Length: 144
Image 1 (tube, rainbow, N blue to C red):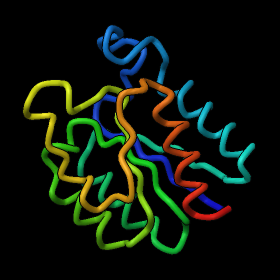
Image 2 (image 1 turned 90 degrees about the vertical axis):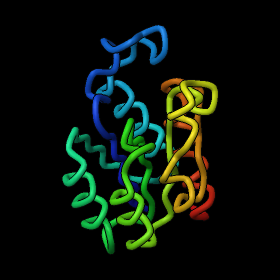
Image 3 (image 1 turned 30 degrees about the vertical axis):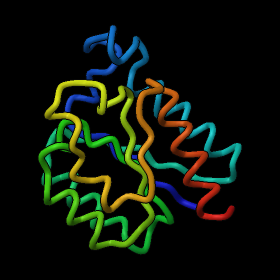
């Protein structure tokens, strides 16, 4: 089983950016945790990050036929990107949306996710653990 982990804008700043909200764990450390947990679950995880919306769309589109599932933390694009939503919808690969904070308890503009309607699940509010929980749920849903 192959899983693609996509991280969007500003997530490369984890560990430095607003530690009171996001903690002190770097994106590299989160990716390592997800990759290692994936191995334990029999899943190969490829991690990737971009600050550019179009690159994220290209990466999602390129996943068709290569990956069994996608984990995505689109960052701020969650609330603004119809094109990322359309890319997820177009490829029809089970996708789980991830957020380290509870977006529903933050600023009102963060309450709306344009992606959730085309994802099979949304995991929010568990800081870096949100990633591992999302992976475990996706692997179980995929039935392996």
